Image (cartoon, rainbow, N blue to C red; front, side, top):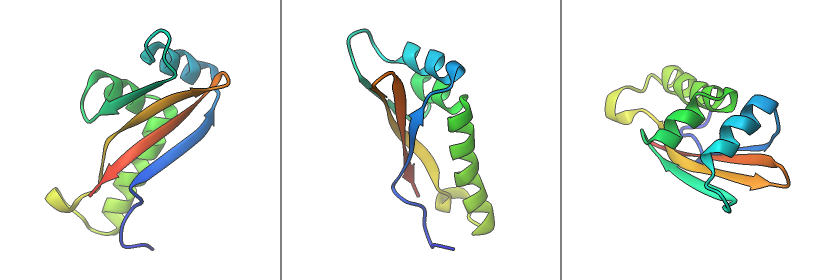
Length: 96
């Protein structure tokens, strides 16, 4: 088991219909990318998706296995959504 999580976790080729609808609505008209920060509205929406929940689970599970608590815990601090040829890529920035 590594001592720390990577600085970013990527989800590529996100193509499910529900995800496409949710993520597409978060990217401004005419843009291909939007960034988000911890606790803003885009962040909250992304973390409600299946990919967001699974990524958050990775972070929480790592913290539990390593017995990290409080200011030592890793967390998703932000990231980005990028539209690529009709599908989406997600970047989750991990801070710890």
